[in-house]
Image 1 (cartoon, each protein chain N blue to C red):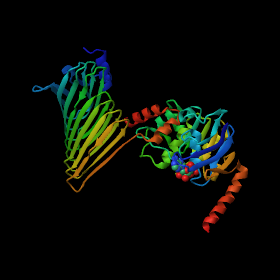
Image 2: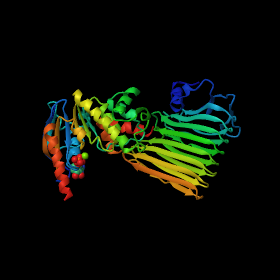
Image 3: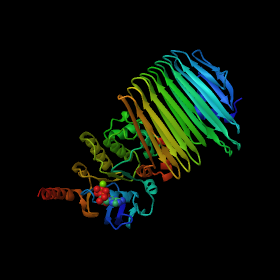
Length: 307
Length: 238
Ligand SMILES: Nc1ncnc2c1ncn2[C@@H]1O[C@H](COP(=O)(O)OP(=O)(O)O)[C@@H](O)[C@H]1O
Ligand SMILES: [Mg+2]
């Protein structure tokens, strides 16, 4: 069922071959569910009204990992999938998602994943998502992920997303709604090259007292690629949100950042920092004094920046 | 051996002379201190030797080879290194990675720690920290010095290593420089205003207004320097 291309793709996006023996997982290929396993505490069931799955994590589940990789290896596939995560109170899980497209054809291959997380009181979720495209076809590789996170009281969600090249067009929507004491931290890493375009819209609402959020975005735009960021942080109650966007721009690329911060409560502290700039010349010179060429130095700086 | 011959540097696109006709020779394994007033041209001279700046006239000969036209990278590969006066920070690069990049191989933890100890940094705490804005100026400066110590160099240039460093770490640093000086494996140029570092020197060169004002063995220059400072302070006092 899984050929070599599949396996490599799966590993690149989710380290699937290294998954623990008894982890729950659901593998989706070219718009079809391919393989699945539920565990005692993590049950995965197909949706009946639309493509996708419900992932039910029982209250109190500790230290489990769930893999839900998606791969597309056929040209002309347009796959939209709806995955809902119901995380029970006090649970502690890691969810490894990811989408890999191998398009060697001339038509577009596209995956739009709509993920919703309903995180119960005091539960913790670590969500890791990696997007990756390859293949020498002329067809575009497109991903438009939507992620919505509803955090109950004192729930914690740490989200790490990375899209390091290979995706021609992406529109990312991330929305988070926090109740009292909840914490939502996101780190977004993005690299575009060639004629790629990427747009990331993010909205975080602190709705309960003492919720907090930290949004870190690191991006590199090369060649003629274009990136647009639109982070919005809203404080509706006492709490803190910190948005930090940092971009390296190269060649003929374009980057735009349109932040919005809003406070609707005098005890909401909302901070935004953003910077777009070339690689610092002293950094290049420093690494060249170690014997690196300018190109090698550049690669090291970008790799570190996106790590 | 490093031979600097009639070196001059003018700011590109202007006729502002920063370095004017500077010549000196540094024998293998010798320890040279460059000193002199701020703005005198010490860092520029160091950057010219490293290849970060290009001279407008003159030449630089290293181990018998004219390296004036060699790039920064090529000179680095020939064993020349330079610790910046104001080192850059790197988002996401850890101290360990930077030391490894400097040494040219993946440095094991204990070796990284040894280099950090030489500059007075309590090592384990630092290894996995990024060399970014979360570190203080003095910490970044000491990590910079450690990266140069981690390289296998024939000529190491340190630009005001004492700047921003507390007294305790400074003592560690002086000890490290003393042991480098006594080993005589590599030639060392240190730009410094510190008497304790000057005392380690075989030779001292005083640079002011882009020219060499005095040069000679430490025993001859150091006492004279003391008097010169007294005079300078005295004049400022009036
Ligand atoms: N690229 C440059 N452009 C303009 N002025 C420069 C440049 N490099 C150095 N200078 C000037 O040259 C002088 C010497 O600088 P520097 O070599 O840093 O002195 P030092 O290290 O002795 O304090 C200073 O007045 C400095 O402002
Ligand atoms: Mg200087």
